[in-house]
Amino acid sequence: MLASSALADAPKIEFPAASPTCTLKQHVGLTDIEVDYSRPGVKGRNIFGGLIPYGKVWRTGANSATKVIFSTPVKLNGAEVPAGTYALMTIPDKNEWTVIINKNADQWGSYKYDEKQDLLRFKAKPIAVKKPVETFTIEFNDIRDDSSTMNLTWDKVSVPIKVGVDYVDKLTAQIDAEMASDDAKKPYFQAAQFYYNHGLDLQKASKWIDAAVADRDAHYIVYVKAEILNKLGDKAGALAAAKHSKELAEKANDTGYIKLNEILISKLK
Image 1 (cartoon, rainbow, N blue to C red):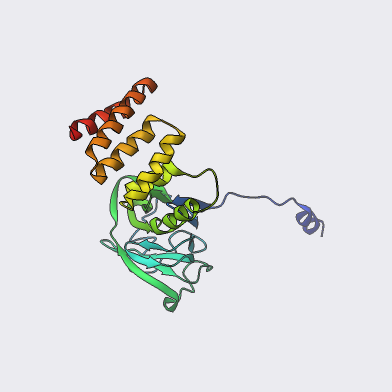
Image 2 (spheres, one colour; image 1 turned 90 degrees about the horizontal axis):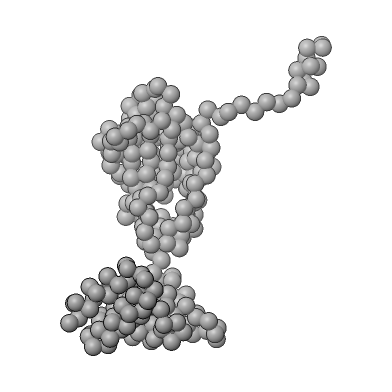
């Protein structure tokens, strides 16, 4: 009785988890991506084709199935996925993996996996890594405004998944709404640069960059004006803007923009 009482009164002890949980958050373009998963270790075991059998559904981690949340629609290896919360599961194989986006986001392992709940499946090619990775890792690399690569890496294998996001239409609508508003302070430079970079309405971009220069005669702003005028076919205007930008860059001791302007000036002469 004393032993039982002492055991009941003993303080609770927290031991390290065999496969610690991890929450990964990544912003790509205008999209928030969150991945919740557990991270098992190799611990001297044979992983793919051993502990994780080929040809069978894997929770893609440990404990609960890996959960992925997209704040906007995305494309995974070209396949469209609506905004939402999903289970990310896989079927590993030696030469090709099947990636599964399942609508049942809250499930333990893959024991109650239901193929009928699959939103989609697509293929991905595993890549051999030079240095084995002890702990299962999901990470985002090659991050750009409209895409990133999500890598599933463990032991000697990494599986890249291309994540594509569409932000141009959304941001264009936001820019146009802001420019039509009564706000005194408008993002003229950023809007003009965005329109120029994405091949949108250059007449709007030219108007906005003029407003930006009027507000601040900075070398990097004038350089964008030169590029816009060049793309509009106004070579004389572009040359004058590039020369002015170079002079401002020299005063600011910005060697990068000095070189950019020299390149542009040589093309315009």
